[in-house]
Length: 361
Image: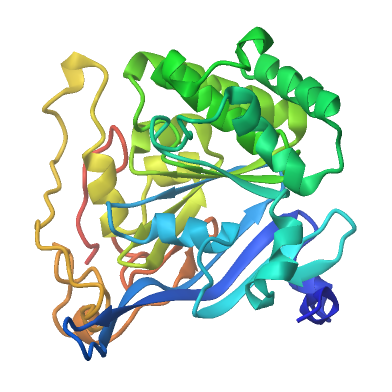
C-alpha cells in the first residue's frame, strides 16, 4: 500500500487544532488452546471501539487500572501493534491527514520519527551492551542522513537538554541511576525531533523524589520543542500535575474525557469517582475524611465482558435493568465533559476534596 492511498479524502475530519484522532479502534488478541493442534478459542478485547483525539500542544492523560488497555492503545498509536479495527488519523506538518492504521509497516516507518515513546522501566529499556551515544543516536541512523560527527553533536546537545553531561555519552547504562537512565530514555525519544511523544508510565518506576524532576523536565521540553504528549499512567496524583485533559479507560473502553480541573472536581462517571477516591491525600489532616469508594476485586474477563455497561458489575449506582442490558454511549454531559454512563446527568459524584452524592430523585 502506498502512502497516497492512506491520505484521507476528507482532511476536515480532523479539526485544525487536532494532531491525532483515534476513531473506533479495537485491538483483539487471540486465545489459543495448548497442544500440538492448537486453535483459536476466543479473543481478549484489550481495546474495544475506542475514540479520542489529541490536540496539538496539549498533554492528554490516559488513566485506568492495570489491564484496562491503556498501554495497548498507546502501542497501537505508535505502531507497535496493528489494530484489528478502526482508524488512527494523523495530521502531518503539511496539513495532510493520513490513516496510520491503514498503512503497511513500510509506509508506517516514515512516521516513526514523528511519534516516539518513553518507556516505563529505565532499567530494562536500555541495552546494557550499548553506550549512551549508541542508544540515543540510534534513531538518527534510521531517520536522518547524518555523519558520525553530526550524530555525536546532536546526541551531546540532547543529553545537555535533559540534564546530563555530554562527556558521559561513552559510558554504559549501568553507570547511571534510575532517574538518569530515564533522562537517557527521554533523550532517545526526542533526538529525532518528534511531534507526538507517548509517555507510558514514564515516572512510575522512579523514586518519589525524582518524579517531580522528570515531570518538570517533560514540561520544559514540551515548551522548548513544541511537543504533544499522551501521558499514560495509573497515578492520578501525577496526572493532575501535568495533564491538560484526562481520558479514563475501563476494560478497553473510554468511559470519561474531560479537562483535568473539571474531572477532578466533578467526575461524571462512577469509575472515575472510585479512582479519585483512591488518590492519597498529602495533608495528614485530611486523611480518613470523605467517602471511601471501594470496588470489587473481581475484574471482569476482557475476553467475555459483561453485557450492557461494562462497569455495572462493580458499580454501586447501577440499575440492574438498564445498566445490565443497555450499553451507554460516550456523550457530552453538562456541556464540558464526556461520559459513558446512563445516569451521568443525575449523579452527583465526589471529586477530590468533596463529598460523594447520590442519584437525584
